[in-house]
Image (tube, rainbow, N blue to C red):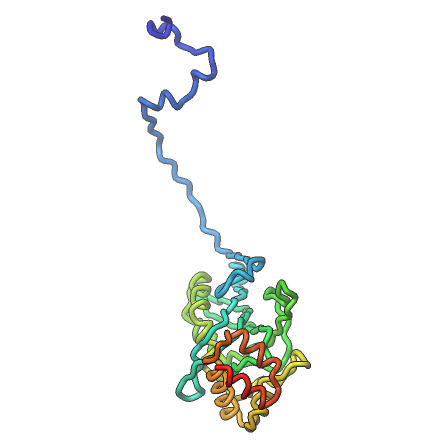
Length: 269
């Protein structure tokens, strides 16, 4: 009766103070409130804990806007890729998983790129066929040194010979540089070959053959850089047509130190 006559103006029960029933037949209008924000210039991405589930892409990115230093780790997926010759031509070759760690500086008003350090890492570093790897050890700052199954990853610096710099030099912002790295990392590895450096002959694991020793077992003059690369790329190309995955191919190469074992591998096509 009291409700019908509207003689009760203030409900004495908290449940009658609910806003939801009132909004059923009413609407509320509020004034727009603009909050000015400044975009954060620093960038930090770290998904290294999920490395095993990432097939191809960045696992670590750190950009400091004050120092203009960009540091990154890029995991490059195993697969069959097109290797370009030193002068012309190309051939498909398998590659294992690779890790690329880099430090680059973005300078000045146009953010001119200066490459401070580029390194490459792999379980099969001494068997990979790339032509721009120094014969030395490198210690990564952020890239993994061991995988979850305790597999060791070996690292060496890359002789980038201004090719990475030239591919990156038009980057005007850190985000643009990061996107560009993702796009150029494969052509950077497989083009712009360096004939100052032959096939790897540095034993990161003394119990496994190096690429140069593998070619020597084919009867090839390993001191003839062009010929040794051509033969090794051709061998890898033939092995890519077997039933083995790229990772399995390198597992076999790491345990294959005689001409007879090469023939056995090729017979399993």
